[in-house]
Length: 331
Figure 1 (tube, rainbow, N blue to C red):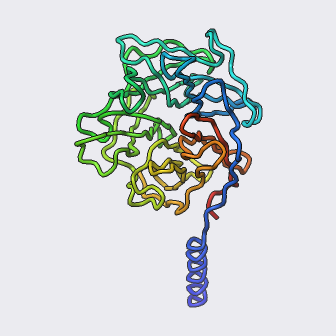
Figure 2: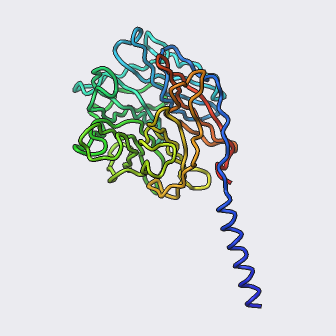
Figure 3: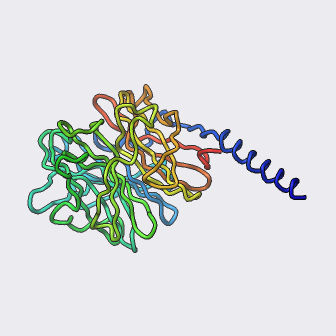
């Protein structure tokens, strides 16, 4: 009897291992046309939440002719996540939320993330004094505004809530925050930029910080993933979204800084890895509105679907696109 029992256990373990080895990543369906064109030449960096059956999107809007003061955070809503209407705000430009900051640490705001925490809405954004675009305007830091309804936000914190570390991976810029639950606290994954003399292998790395209240953040040491682990991102990764899946695994959607940019995904038991990386990108450039690539994913998992919004761009325009896959992502 013992021999039979052992044989059954060994056979079961072998079948489980075989099933694990044979698991494959699901395919993605990508819409060829953008789902949101907006009112500016630049409409990107979506951050999307769903509540009460509807979707709310926060995005970066900028047009050098219509909004010469620099990029700003805007809002739109949707009943299905595909057709969007700008939120009317007390502003001459529809959908646009003008933030003013004291101490003159920023006059440009972009690349936001919306977190609902304890019945309040925390809108994280990156801010800087515009000297000719993001990459020419360091230091680029992380700011925060809050709201009780998700639509009307009070003035930002008078200073950044997180700044770059001297000689660190994020010395020149912090960008693209994404926040998820982690144990009894929060974890933020963000892009850290260091342009020169930083001793880093890549110009951009995905870094992590933790917080108990969403305001004070403690940085972790080093990147959470290496370009050497990612077949489609040999030069590095940026602009990510961290999602805790229904299976209690962390899914990291991230953008390559290779040319053209692509979006891919990895999963792990821990937000710090090690990561099981999908060897193929899931959203790539297309000839219609994203010739230069796909970046900045925002993801919601619902109704056995993984829904992903991103922005694609050409040399003159940025628009928001959409892709989806079935859940689970690997089976």
